[in-house]
Image (cartoon, rainbow, N blue to C red; front, side, top):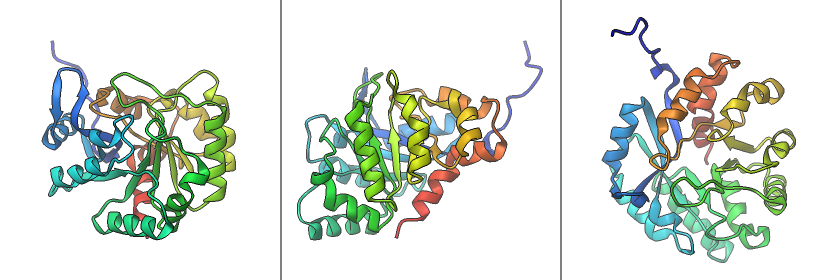
Length: 267
């Protein structure tokens, strides 16, 4: 049977996936996801670009993610559609943090990730790192989902307070809250976004709420991310493609332009 209508073209959205992974053992039965595997998956779903993290950087209990960060640069070298993201933990004096962040930027890394399941984000412990990231306006993902397939993150009261304190202390630091789900969590989203304009949420669990949120605060504080291959990007492409109640301008901002603007803002 032939379809009566063609699927609508989504290339105009210029999809930028805000969080993807390469590396070992992220999906059951797959020993290694190569960058080319990820490119093939992106092509299948019309994703133009992706922010990429190496799975070796987010191993729970590994407080030294630099090995995965280094592997990432080697493995995606020459693949312009893939933008590297480094997982960072504090390393000590502010001069050392400055050298590391400058080295990161010199190597073309424009996005950082903090991973609370690997090291709790204690404001006093992360103070120097956060100050340097703010100085350079580096978009910083705070990822609450576990580094295992089909696991979600959740935020307790301390997490919300920590995010609020960081956002207020470092108002020029773009924060992207990722992997967030949990009973009662959504009640705090809108008040936080209204209060802290430098806080953004990725869309993995809230696309059904976009129309209401956008009506209240606009589309600028949301980004699109699938976490491929942990999740099938197809369902999240469908969300951005078909969700009703938002304008095409808002759809395109969430699909990639919001994150592109944040990345272009690094100094």
